[in-house]
Length: 220
Image (cartoon, rainbow, N blue to C red; front, side, top):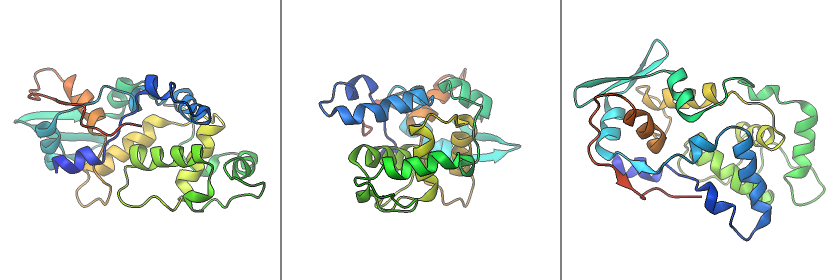
C-alpha cells in the first residue's frame, strides 16, 4: 500500500511555481491560495510510510470522527482538528450546485479556447492549458482519483468555477468528507492525503511515527 499512497499524493511548492516562465499559470496557484488551500496543498512533503499504512489498515469513521490505531495507540481526527491544522475555511458552499448561474455561464466561456461555450461535462483537451492544470490538481489532490483524467466531471468543473471566481467554499467540510470516505471500509475512494495525514499524526502527543521519508512525493 505504501507505494500507492505515494503515487496518489502530490505536493505544491508555491514558491517555485511562481518562478515559472509561463505567466498564464500563476493565476491558478494564486486562486488556490485565495480560496484557502495553501497550507493544505503546500504543507511539508514528509511521508511516514509505516504509520500511514497502519492508519489506513485500521481506520474507520465513528460518530463523524476518523479513528484508527498506530502501534497500539488510538488515533482520533475530528473535522475541527483537521481544519485547524491546515487553516481551512469552514464557511461557504458545501453543495457545488449552489454556484451562481451567472458564474457558470461566464466560466464556460473563460475556460475554453474559442468563443464558444464549453460543456460542463467536457474533455480536458477542450480547456485552456491553465484550466487543464487546475482540473488535474483537483482530480489528484482534492478528490484523489486514480486513472485517466481526460474527462472533466461536473463536480470538478463546478469546483473550478468556484475557485476561479472566488466563491467561498467550505473546504473543511469537503476535504474532511473525502478523508472519511478514504477510511470507510468498502469505500471506492482512493487512499491519499498522505502528507496531510502525516502532519496531523505528527502533532498527536506520544505517537511514534518512526523515521519520515522526505522528497518522494510528486510536485506541481
